[in-house]
Amino acid sequence: MLAFGAAEGELTLVEVVAGSVQAAGAGNNYRLLLRAAGGVGTYEAVVWGVPGSTAWTWKVLSFRRVAGDQN
Image 1: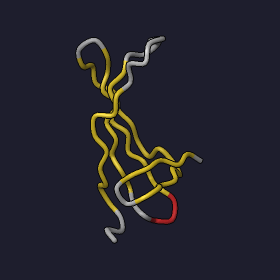
Image 2: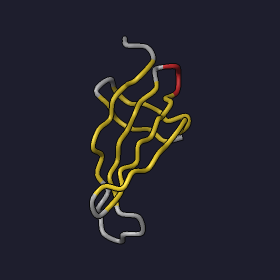
Image 3: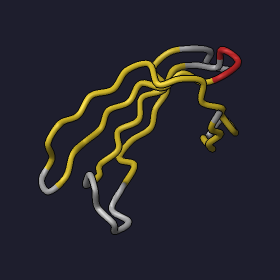
Image 4: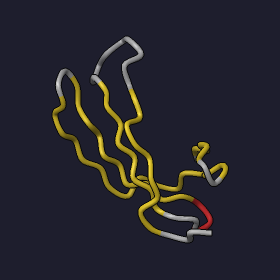
């Protein structure tokens, strides 16, 4: 499992529910639908990156809750 921080506190990744790729300039936008442990919600992350790059070129463009408990 992978843990990551968010405004609500720490979340633990359970699975990648879905993903898609779209060309964006010199790289790609990756849209990922992620499910967090404990029923706290489903999140959408959009990440831009250059596949195969040896440079640190990956950037999180957005991260938001799309479903689940809002408490």
